[in-house]
Image (cartoon, rainbow, N blue to C red; front, side, top):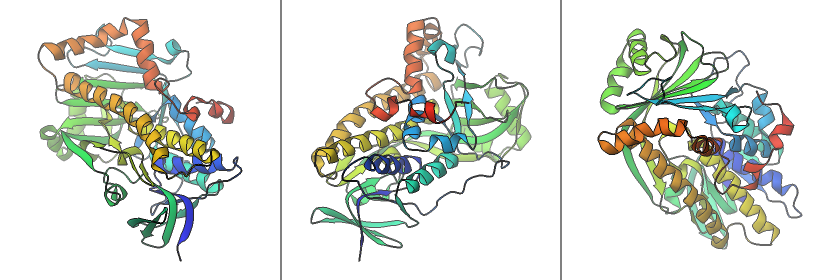
Length: 419
């Protein structure tokens, strides 16, 4: 006999676990609480305090901090390790990091203690799954197998159990089996680039600053870690990525020094190099009857602005808010009229971000000609305009646009100090 729930989330990564935790915590305050389950076959263990940082890190915005606080996870995350960054330096290879043509954001200019946090994704995922379980979410260590709809419910077969739900949420990544099973098509295209991720030591301190240089062959970012090292994300053209991945550690560090223009002095490779090809993806529809997509299952953008996971958490918060409101009004959480409200809200927001990021990659990282040169000079123009800088910092903090209530809240400020 199948286990019955109101909502089943397929995929317990940060976005899926966040959606489940938000739904369950909000349901505790409702007169008719929702029953929620997650399918996650690879639940991560919490890292030991002295364990080295995982290579998979992400930049989390202020809006994401608020959402994670509302999900009951921020205090758990901050208790492990986080690395706040207080400024950003962005420049094109045609100039220098400290030149007039570079762009510099500082948290003090925005009246904020920092501009965000660099955190290991496994730390965030583990904290969110713990928060979800504490709120009553049942976690199944099973793989999704198939889906069918009948009699106002969806029937979900997994590798270990059969479930039914009024709503299924697909948070199972860019290759989403649930998206395919639900018949939701997606458009996918290659960027022609490979992201190389590694941890490095630098001759000069990172100054709690995120550094990013646009190259004509891609984009290079240094993300500051709490122990003084940096995580690099080097989005390199495919023809360059192969030799970089095959180079000795010393030769790779030499190429890294050239690509960074020595902004942080000489570098030294401390870890292995991970790599993955970069693709853009957008689902043509985010919802169908009794099914909604969030995070990478709905959209994937270039990592140059570090917005992927932040967009996903906004998806989770928006969907949870609308489902909660629908349940308060006695509506069916899986009804298409409810889910279309989510699609209209989030699709417009993510499309704006997708077009902007693709323009940055096309004009700043690979552009040539008059339009590209104009865009490259634009970094300096933005830097000399306090109004434009405030606009872009607000975007980076995730505090502009149409936001769900939990993204605007300050619960995380009360739950633990910022670091």
